[in-house]
Image (cartoon, rainbow, N blue to C red; front, top):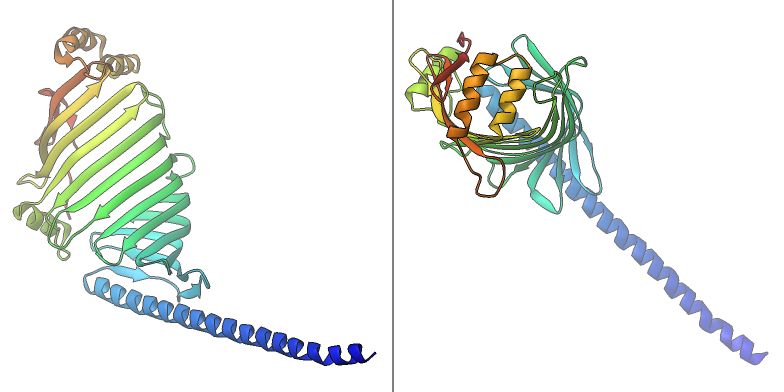
Length: 342
């Protein structure tokens, strides 16, 4: 009995110490949570301030930017602003609209701003509208360099319901360093065209590597901006364009500018693998007359060269655009419509 009586008081301090420990742990978690929430609120405040400053600068340059009042979200893993009814239009008249745009910063990567459009979207140029949707679409903007962004998209659908261009995946990189060349790289996989073609509706892959030298002026009419850009030596450099379509593989490189009439002018090189297969597809579609096809069948073997890697023979020919005429291997293939600057 006396042993039981002396043991009981020893257990009470342990319970009191355990209770104090739980209270202290709860207070510590509350302090950490409160600090995290304060940091989250601070980041969102800075994001809202930065958004307002950026929009004010763009509006002063002639841009149109509109959206609903930003709503906050993402806690505790990210700081996110959702801008409903998003719309941005450049001085040239090209506009992008989305049901909403999410702008997000994550603690693990505070130097990168993630942009994710949501819902229905559209590109507009004058009276032309291109609606599109995406299963996922995200742009990552570097805040450190402030002149580079990457793009990643899946399940894109462009165009109206009865004429939709489908793209399985898209990755890209855009760079616009101050007073230097604007560069664009794109890689597309699994393109399905809305129309039948001689090579079928599906393009396996396509890539683009292009650069625009000289920044077009932000003010003035389209004709004035195009004239100033041309006179300053502006040019579009197509460093690489590749296409894998059915049994055909093609690549091209060229440089384009504007002539005195503000029409495209340029020259480059086109490479084709399995050109005879392309010729036969065009003949079957009625796009190349039988008489011309017979001459081409005789000439092609003389123009092709073996592929060092053992693939189909390669055809390399010069291409040019001059006075709106498109020429391949000095043969006129057609005429471009005139660009009407207003």
